Length: 218
Length: 192
Length: 206
Image (cartoon, each protein chain N blue to C red):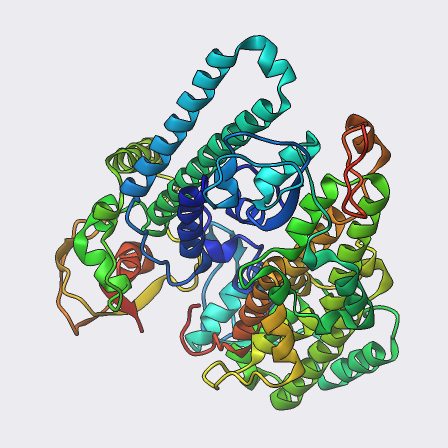
């Protein structure tokens, strides 16, 4: 039945946006399903134009049965289009959200180890393989756009800094829960972050590492 | 309730099926009935999703009676005790009773339209206190305890439809956030 | 959306507490220091045993480092809170007027500086009772006629913290109610002649 494939797409998409925390991994871009829907829609389009040509203007204005038939096909095609667009639009929104949640860390976002850390139990694809090539291009483009925008006033404000908790004290005690290796801090100092070690540092310096899961506040 | 083009909820709500009667013969449309017939005949009854039914009915190719979730029987049950009615049973576990009802109302004449909208509104308003109490209760409940589905509160929860479940989640979330803040202690850590 | 999901419904209690910490309060410093110019203003001089007026965030920071005593605001006393609680209970129609940052300030002071307050456990208990009385009134209000008509909820004298807890639920509920309102005249004129006779299952005769 027309529209069934499109419904599958929307249902799957709806399911994946239901949970808010922790952020579910983005499901794999449903390329086969989308291709099938596009094929179905094209076939509908061809069928409509063929019928219109065959029967001519007069029939179209008088043969109600014909008009009904064509209306159904037209509605099905429009329905497919709406479902496809909603699917794509929801995914694009999800991609942007994940970029912001990662504090703009594109490399971190696309690395395979990230999704394992977030959802160790699920057999989830990592973000990079879940995106279609176009979506990946979009993500890179969005990343560049944001970096470009924020660089203008980076000396005053870091647009991608975490804002979920209002700032408290200046210094923060952290414990390393994942080896981060040698990290160069803002002031130029080099610090070796080995698992298990504790440090007392300025919050602004280590905010990023806390978000990415290398450090833990104590 | 948004009818936004891109809204997934809206798309799903439009998918609810209802029984329609064709007012004319339509050659070639037999597949809608799912059988082997090539054509649809006048007076044939077919289950169609609302996104088809709406336009077809507006153009008088089909007609439809009020679908089961909105009949007088349901109306009486709601009048008797709105919060006892399991709306989820009427439209399926993932259904949208209010949204779909509103979409149907849009294609009705004045009087049945006003009537249906009134039924929807009264039901919502009369179920709201139970929903709100439940959300407040769940905001503070200890969720490590197993769910007890026998009390009337839990029975209501099982019967909530889509928008009610979203509303419940919102209430529960803001309650939890508040409670978490009240219970937290910013004394020792020196931060948040 | 760029804004994290937890921040989208409105200001969180943490954010409201942050804002509350802008208010000033008296402290008795346990150290000496001349006047100091910070980004937020000029504070001091700090000379025990004289009191100094500083923003709450500075007071809390110093207190955590054991560098001062905090002078409780005059409303944070067992006597005053008992009076407010009594008024709140007797006022069935509305809410008592509290200072805007009443809840956040009292909580944060009890958390960080309970040793500077007299009878902190009684204060805690009074504040808890006050919250419960107000919450109960809010719940009743949500089932009032105004809300049931989808028109309005009386929230005079609710503090920002209580409002932000209430807002997301109330907004969604009232939006739904408004969308189920009977259609206005103008809408129906556009669809003239397009409706169907549906009540008895038969189509309109043309």
